[in-house]
Length: 98
Image (tube, rainbow, N blue to C red):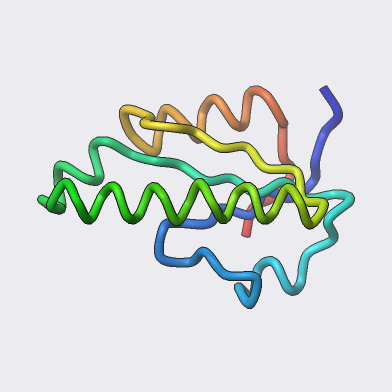
């Protein structure tokens, strides 16, 4: 697997091409990480309809990023952020994150 020096972690409330981390990044050497964390949804007591909306926004944004030429590492319904981040680091071996 090719190393990607920079990981850009985007949360459900940051899904915008105007995100400063995306604006300052190089597509060819970056990977965008998006994580659906089940634990986070339970801790914050989100209504199920709100979670559906957040996950839908994230999934559509991931597709828009891919269409725009970004490499995206998307974790659907991960037990928590930690599990997804560990998996991401093992797979892509980033040198830094933003």
